Structure formats: C-alpha cells, structure tokens
Image (tube, rainbow, N blue to C red; front, side, top):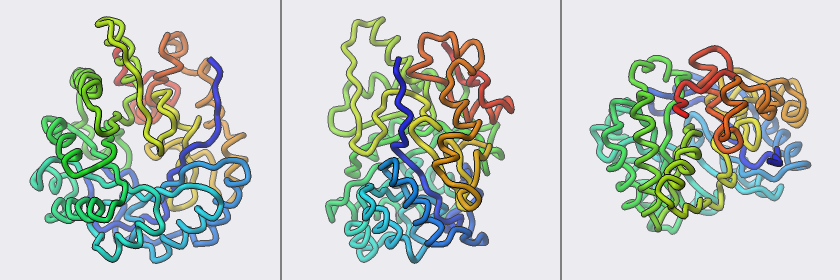
Length: 345
C-alpha cells in the first residue's frame, strides 16, 4: 500500500490556560499557567508550514478563547490559504463571541461528555459547565455555525455513550467524535477508570452498526484505530457493503492511527508531537523548524516505518488501516512501537 505522509491536520495549543478542571486533561491546564508562545512565534510556524503543506489548523488549549489574539491568529492562518478550526469547551461563548467565531473560524468543536449536567459536570469538575456548553451549541445552530461535538469516555460515563451521541445529534452537530481516552496529563490519575479492553471491543462493534444506520451526521471513534479492523471483520462476516464516509475537515479517514503520518500537535511551549496524547517530544519550534522536525525527527520517522512496529502489528493484515494507538502503547509500556494494549485482533 502506498503511503502519503503529507501534513493534513495540525492541532496548535495556543494557551495552557483554562477555566475548567477536566479529569482527563492532557495538558493539566489551569488558570494558574501562563502563555508561552507569542503571536509571532505562532505565525512564524504557520508561515513555514504553509510553504509546503496546507493543513487544517485547529486552535486549541487549554481554552483558546482566553487568548485575546485568537481571532488575529485565525485570520493569519486563513491568509496563508489554510482552514481554521477552534476547539473550545464552549463555556465562554455568548452571542457576541459567536458572531466573531462565525467571521473568523471555519469549524468549531465543542466538548460534551454526557447527555446531562450530572455526568458532564462531573467530568469537567465545574458545576454549570454543561448548561453553558449546550447554550453555545444552541447559539451556533441559531447563527448557522458549523460545529462538531467531541465526547470523551471512561468507566464513569461509558453507559451514557449512546445517549451522548443522540444528544449531540439533537443539538445540530454536523459530526460526533467518540474519544477513547489515553492516560496522559491528568488522565494518568484516572487510569483505573479507563474502559476495559473487553468493553472497548463491544463499544466499537456498537459504533459500527450505529454508523451503518446513521445518515444525518458524521460519526467516528477517535484514538480507537482497531475500529477500522472491526468494520472490515463485521462487514465480511455479515456480507455488508460498508462505505466509509468522511467529514470535509477530516484527514480522509483511511487509517486508524495517523499520528505523525498526516497529523501533528504543537503544545503551548512549542513542543512538537505526533498527536496530542503522545508522551514524547520530537522537537521544539522555538529551537528548530517545524518542517525539519516533521521530516527528520526519529519519532516521526518511526511512526511512518510500519516494519519497525512490534512483530504482531508489523505482520498484521490490518497494519495499513489500524496501526494501533502509538500513544497508548507508550503510556502503558514505555514504548511507542509496542503493541496497543487495547488490541484484540
């Protein structure tokens, strides 16, 4: 199979500040932290990237709306011919802010981790977060702003997965992403709450049959590369003509784990990683060029050399569509080339 390792999607963490205290936060974000990257640091990186690639750049945090120059950054990215996403918790959105989002942002993602306030606010560690995020969704819908919903799951809310999907759809989301948490940042503190391997398989199988029936919005598991094997196994077993759909702001959906292959992450200190959950840094944009890191760092090269993966993955028929979660392998075994601990193939 021929592989194209062009950068198609980049998450840029422009601030570590956040007004929530989510149990699974990869960044350990809080209002006590300070911004490190200046406007010029960020736009210099955008300049360089635009010379070779035109990825969707998602401004994230922390809570990106806490940066006063967030819309200036978005405008600069657009001026270089790239589309801009905004990953927000939605709690700071009002009509005025939403109008600015409509003028400066191409697509927005909201984080909703349950179908009611009890579940969501427990996950976000702040009372009232659910109502404010849902209000943001309603404002977006009223103004015709395209938004998606990201939902993260552990044992404490896994029984609400189907309800959360239905709730996201009822809000008018154009897509729903089901995140299987990788234990990084504050997520390490809830390692005992992570969904079991057995339940993980059942959830992916549920998602496959749900996706077959879902015609109105785009749905996709995230950090769950085995899903692509499940789709093939279930389709073959039951003679189902399964056709994968893609969101216009996605990376194409051709493979499970594309960390370091078609996506990357720059954290609030300028450190570059294959994805936001990855534990190790491949370099830093304050010390070297992003493109040099993308093309020449050992970590990124390893991510693209499937023969260097553990023996089971390297020999697996699904290596080209799954690949295993490299971040989860590192989090569990201290080796990003090890087998994904959730692998059931």
